Image 1 (cartoon, rainbow, N blue to C red):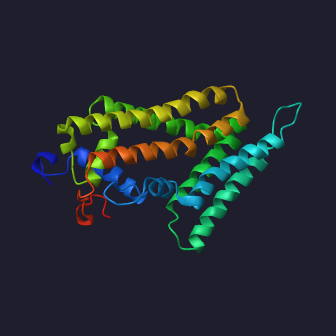
Image 2 (spheres, rainbow, N blue to C red):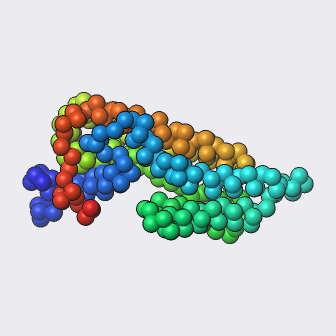
Image 3 (cartoon, rainbow, N blue to C red):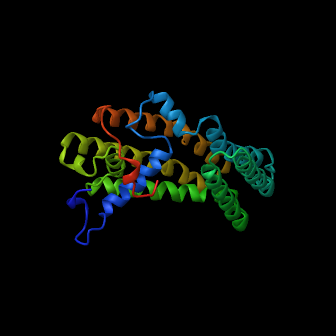
Length: 254
């Protein structure tokens, strides 16, 4: 690690730590530009394969279908307890299957926690639309952080890729890389902003079925092409011979 990447006390700079955290997360998701593999394979791996897709989609899909088919034509309310019960139940099943199979369960556990928290919020407020509040907050937070990082000249995509490719923050001196990482980060921020722009009015109008439907439509179907574009752009910026950061230099202990 170069001196310019450390502060006066010899500790890693904030950009180093953040880059390591983001890069480590990308690597665990299978998004390491230094590794070989077709774009389709990388995107599929990033989504978690069939299991990951089912874990991501089914709880929300079951919630939406259950709520919709149980809506009373007079009160315009569905069976909230049944909807959240089936949704959380599915998340529990997915987590147990991974634990029994001794496969990595962090994504399933994270999904279970998020599903349970959303269900608890919906039950506490008595509003089915509240089941999607955490997703709205997440989209707003991610979009804002990505946008700000690009505007101040430290796009998060660049920090993650710099760590993965053992490039540190040297990419900031390369106009081509800096421009590419700026626009990639802006594109990801725009994705989260678009989700929020579509889903927030539906939430405020209490349009549960439409809200859940658009959440699914703007989820993996938009995530997959964004991963593909990012992957292709990064591979175009770095030759295949580029050396990835060694495991021993990882700041997250992996």
